[in-house]
Image (cartoon, rainbow, N blue to C red; front, side):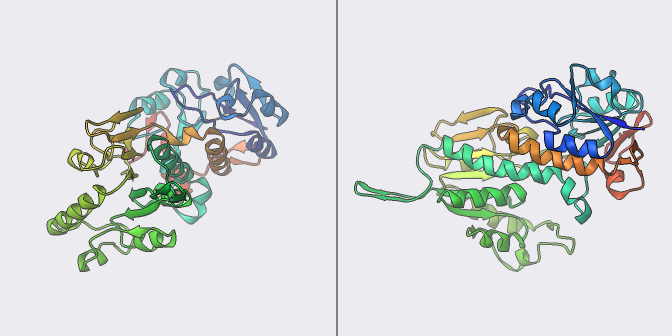
Amino acid sequence: MAFTIAVIRERRAGETRVAATPDTVKKFKDMGAMVLVEAGAGTAASYPDEAYAEAGAKVAKEVLDKADIVLSVRGPEQGQASALKKGATVVALLDPHREKDLLQALAKAGATAFAMEFVPRITRAQVMDALSSQANLAGYRAVIEAAEAYGKAFPMMMTAAGTVAAAKVFIVGVGVAGLQAIATARRLGAVVTATDVRPAAKEQVASLGAKFVAVENEEFKQAETAGGYAKEMSAEYKAEQAALISSHIAKQDVVITTALIPGRPAPRLVSAAQVASMKPGSVLVDLAVDQGGNVEGSKPGEIVETKNGVKIVGISNLPGRLPGDASALYAKNLLAFTGLLAKDGAVAPDFEDEILKAALVTRGGAIVHDGLKS
């Protein structure tokens, strides 16, 4: 018997992405699923209702009460949870550490919910890694936003009237977003430097044509565990590194910060004093603004201009500024994940599968993830 997948329209302010595209609808149909798409779900991402209908989906105003699997970007709102079919499965970026009320609502509704943030970073799950697919676009967009806010050109330009100097761009945090920010800033012609607490990041930074900035003493060289995680550094090292970074930030035109810690507030990386040391017209872009911010003074959804003329860009949901591409990548993440939930035309997840086990947050009327139980 065919199962039903519903793709809902996002209701969070500023959310432009959608959880399925016409291409993934066709793939769901190949799995034996009936696909319902809430009217207007893809409009902001340039996927009109007609495109979903042509792909074989049924476009409707009400879809939650009929769905065996509900796909979403940010999850249904708390008030929608009661409309879910009993035993429905919900898959979304649920922001589980901060959206506890939503998890309680999903549990109360009897839903089995999976948080895409908790998909483990193992080889088999790479195609399902929504955090990486979205961070990649966030890193790119951060540079575009910085270029928009910066009142000068990024590349060096030599003209008869004189030479325009290349912008100096500093990337703090060399994960997926940071690496893409480095690559994008380099493509725009900036002089790029970057820093990270992991020694292995130096080689990654160099491979993209940027310069690594860190106190590279013996302690730094031993600062990574066998598992690839950063070790706690001594107070002496932290003081040396802080002094180096402070002097470096003061010379930069653009600083982009990318550091996030799952389940915890974002680490403070740039202080108000460091912001004050920058030249008028300089720009900071804080990718972690929604989690508390890496930059002191950043505010979600705002561009703050300091007394010394420095702009702190705190745009929320940077992937949502590229809704077509962000939706296409996220939809493919969900398509791969849904392949673990359905078998022989029915919803039959193997809850012992390491991917499903890691991502499961509610089941049987309760919050079941060990990291979320209170």
